[in-house]
Length: 389
Image (cartoon, rainbow, N blue to C red; front, side, top):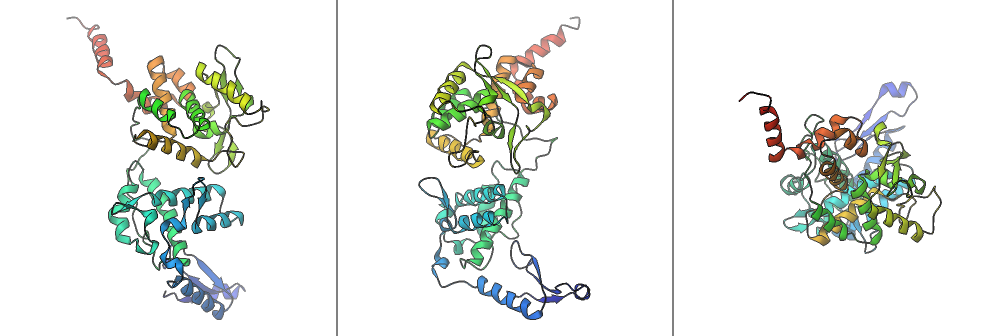
């Protein structure tokens, strides 16, 4: 690796370390490091070159699954996963950043090159051409350009680790441009309406009874995932009205723990269904009648459930049902479709139950679902009645 040492006289005059080693153009996630002496800078470059040199140890034969994979218990393991955990414990990265890097690396592991999943490829054999011709095309499916750019950044970090570990000597994701649909607020991707039969099938195939209950709750309340993960037993009123209700007052934030709901309107009260009321009553007893400050849907290993668990569970259910994978958030969209069927175009009520800040958001997301032949005929007849024949 050809890296020069640059001396900054202005830093030296201030008594600061002035010999700079800049690796930003040489490796992904490179950086500038300053040293007090030229000898220290040279030693650092020698160390980098040693790390970048392909090793004769078994790391040169690592499969991508050796970097990161899920074991039979669902735990994320592997050399890269262990490194991320160490970085998190040292305070170098946040937990959400660690989780995101793991999620994106696992996503890559599930992609295919020449009809073989990347998890089973040797790390050294994955090329820049593979990324340009095959991988990026698979990653872009149902993802925006912004999401792809973020995903590629984390994938580059994974391969940077593989370089330092002696798996390979180049980063195949460097220079790969993100592809995907550019989605703006004024041009939001149209949401697909899912049938009740499809949702029922997916929920019936959730991997455990606990996940069945979580999915059922999501589909019959429309709570966002972060809102559902933050629901306390004190937020439920199972004896209120006919079927009870849930008070949505807080949410798990992506990078900030428990906080407020996404919007001011997100703080709302959502009625429960008879099926949900019965399920929650049984869940309350099964959990040993927990106190009001306990979570209704806690994590399996940590107090707060991880977002990754929800994604993995619904993907497993879709695979078990032999249907196309959907997102957990699609259960919320399904709830909206049921509201439209039962409330018609009562947008104000639908907005309140969905927790949208503005009614135009509700209309722009779901208004096209009301565009059908019967509605067109109704409008046509109404307009025609205002004119003389």
